[in-house]
Amino acid sequence: AQSVTQPDIHITVSEGASLELRCNYSYGATPYLFWYVQSPGQGLQLLLKYFSGDTLVQGIKGFEAEFKRSQSSFNLRKPSVHWSDAAEYFCAALTDSWGKLQFGAGTQVVVTP
Amino acid sequence: GAVVSQHPSRVICKSGTSVKIECRSLDFQATTMFWYRQFPKQSLMLMATSNEGSKATYEQGVEKDKFLINHASLTLSTLTVTSAHPEDSSFYICSAREPLGGSTDTQYFGPGTRLTVL
Image 1 (cartoon, rainbow over the protein chains, first blue to last red):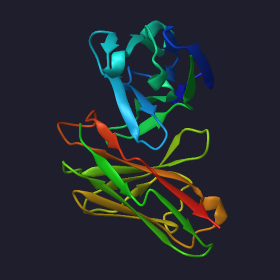
Image 2 (image 1 turned 90 degrees about the vertical axis):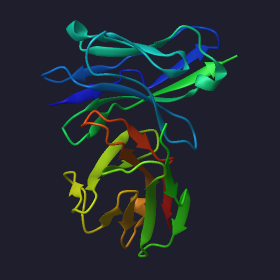
Image 3 (image 1 turned 45 degrees about the vertical axis):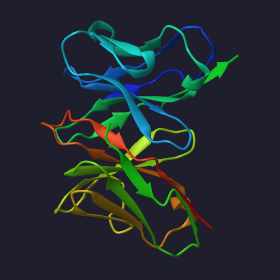
Image 4 (image 1 turned 135 degrees about the vertical axis):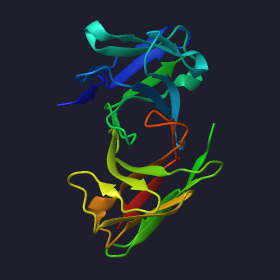
């Protein structure tokens, strides 16, 4: 079955340290992949997306993600986190031509001083 | 980017009553909108796909008679939770697809509606 897995439910990182959030997918073909961030009281915001081409994708807020077909992964990274990066992060995959998304379980990021 | 609004942001109702949630695309026309449900500390679960002018397509396990969806215009979709019960309490989120060329069009999400049924 098609699935999106985020192995880490919760990550704590110090401000200024690097951050990597893991995402694995299980699809037959190359999926269209997304990373969204959800802050309290706000809607999901798209950080970046991968459809094809360069496997290293640059997004907003200093985030980037790398698509690795061999590992079925699409991990999100940021070199230096800010306190404002504390939020819930979701990896998602496009599942059909109508635009339906399947989301991973999410990773809660806590940033400590 | 495009903006999607939801109203109300939170609602508390008595068991047995119906609640309507609105989802609006403010600066673009959305031929397709999606409704999600999110339980605390959990991911978003797609409930239904709403296409303007046609009946919504519900995901397996979602009661179409309980969760009525109407997409009467290109900027408005509504979700009505009929005869709400405490187990319907949840965070409901809509998204709207900006039609630029296909299924890979960016989806914009509303801020969500917190429903509490007493």
